Image (cartoon, rainbow, N blue to C red):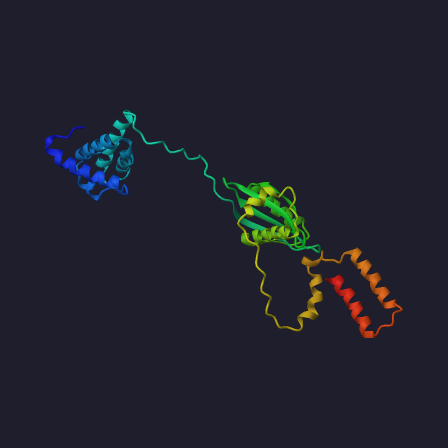
Length: 287
C-alpha cells in the first residue's frame, strides 16, 4: 500500500519509531497507539520491504499486542501479504496433545511394624499424564525394600482394596501424610546403598517417583521423666500392634543352651562374674 503524499511525513515518523524498536529490545513503541491504522499499515509494509524477514517478529508483535483492534488488523494485513510473497516466520513446533506433568503422591497408608522389622507401605500417586497409580511395598528396617508391586488403579478399585485390607489384615493400618511415606521409602533406598544391595526387580519402575525424596532425619528423643513407665513396659506386648513381635526360635534355643552351660560351668567364677555373663547372653538375645 502506498500512502498519499499528505501522509508521507507521518509514515516516515512511524517507520523511524519501528526501526528504533527493531534495533532495540523489540518492545512496541508507545507512540503507535496514536498512529492511524492506514499510516501504521504503510509504515509496517515499508519496514518489511526494507528489512525482509528480520522485520517479521516486530510486525507479528504489533498484530498480537497492539492496543487497538484496528492497529492489529492493519498489521495482520501486512503479514498476509508477506506470507503470499513467501516471507514467513518459522512455525513453532506443535505442543503435545497431552502435557507431561510430574508424579505427585496423593495419599499413603502403612501397617504396623511386625516382629521381623517389616511393614507394608502403600502410596497413591497421580501419574505424569494423569490417572492414579498405587505403589505397594514391603520395607524392612534391616534389609530395605523386600517386595514391590502395584500399578494403575481406579478410585473404585482403590476403595475396595482398602476395605478388604482392613477386614483381612491382623496388623493395624493407618493413613499417614504422603511425604512421610515417601521418606520411608527413601530411607530404605539409602539402606540399600549402604549395604551394597539392590531392591527387588519389580521396583525400578517406581524409582523415578522417589528421585527427589530425602530420607527422614533422626527423631528427637521424647523428653519424658517418668520412672513408672519401665514397670508398665510389659503391657506393650499385649497391644495388637506388637502381637507379631517375637524372638527368633533358633536364636532363642542357642542362647538358652549357652545360658544353661554358663550356669553349670565348672569354672570357678564369682557370683558377680556369673551374673554379668548371664546378663550378656540375655541382652544379646533381646537386642
